[in-house]
Length: 89
Image (tube, rainbow, N blue to C red; front, side):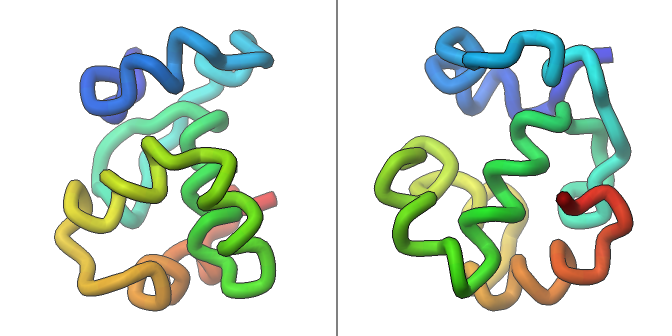
């Protein structure tokens, strides 16, 4: 299965440094759809308040699009879900 974010984050998927992570997919409780581990980790690290600023600076595609795609108010709202997910590293 393909990551549901692949069509929204084409550049990020093409430039993936660890392509094997695209093969690992999970149902994301944030999106209620299947995403790859690469996207999961990036979303989680941007959502986490401690790593948010540094991660968002280096991953502008995710930082700019995810909140709108999932229909959340802000990254703190995203973190409420990500922090409780068992997949989060």
